[in-house]
Amino acid sequence: MIHVRSRSTFGYLFNLNHKRIACHESYTERCAKLRMKRFIYILILSVCVACSPPTKSDNKGASEEILQIATNDSLICHTTLISTHPFESDSMIYNQMQSMENVELHKEVFINRHVENTFDTVLKYSFNNSHVSFYQTESELWVIRMDLNSTGIKTKFGFGVGDKFCSISNCQSINSNTRQFVLSETEGLTSISFELENGIVTNIKYSGYND
Image 1 (cartoon, rainbow, N blue to C red):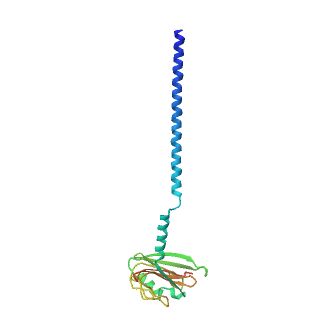
Image 2 (image 1 turned 135 degrees about the horizontal axis):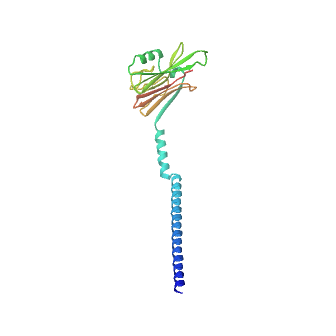
Image 3 (image 1 turned 120 degrees about the horizontal axis):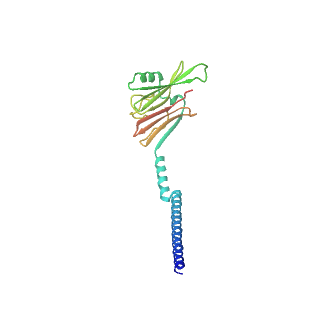
C-alpha cells in the first residue's frame, strides 16, 4: 500500500507542476498579445494625429506667408519682339565673351530643322556665376539665353547689374517697392526680367527665340 500511495502522490505533484507551467505559458502569451495590441493602438493613434487637418493657427500662418509673397511688387509690360532683346549688337557681346578672362565655353551641336545637311551650334559662356548663350548658324549669331549676376555687361537700355534701373519704353515707372520688372513679348516668345533691390539691378534674365 505504501508503494502505491507514493506513486499516486508523485503523479499528483507531476500533474500540478504541469498545470502550473501551462498556466504560466498561457499568461505569458496573453501578456505578449496585450503588448502587441497596445503597440498597434499607439501606432494607429500616431498616424491619425499626423494626418489630421491643420489647426486654425497653422492656416493663419500659411495665409500670412502667401500675403507676404503677394506684397512683392512686380511689373510686367507686354511689348514687341524687338523690344525684349537685350543688346543692340549680339556680335559685340560675343566678342566681349571671347576676350574675357576666366570664362568657360560649352558647345552643343544641333541639326538644323529647316535646311538639310546643316548643323547649328549653341555656345554657352559661363563666368562669375553668370552665363550668356548664343545660337550660331552658318550665317547668323544671336543671344538666346542670359542670366547675369555680375557687372561688366551693359544692355541696350543703358544699364547692367549693379546700375540704377531706368524706365524702359512706355512702361510704367517703378517705385521703391518694385522687386521685379519684366518685358514680355506679346505672344510670349521672348522675355527679359530685371530683379531689383532699392532701384538697383541685381539680376538680369533673358529668354529668347532660338529657331
